[in-house]
Image (cartoon, rainbow, N blue to C red; front, side):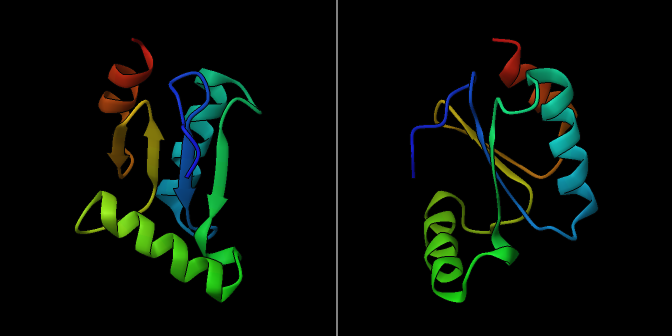
Length: 89
């Protein structure tokens, strides 16, 4: 994994997930398009998907989507209050 920052976070999501769509829109509106990276885990090849899920499993015992990484902070799920708190620093 790269070193995601508050200025350029990394979001893991699922292309069919409504909460992931909401999180993506929140990031676009608050950080600007192109100011974060997005990986749709369900759209990568199976080997890469297994590798990503192993990495995500090391971050939290119960990976759920969306997952947003920024400056060693992990936001699991669409939590607007936490998004505001993390990205207002």
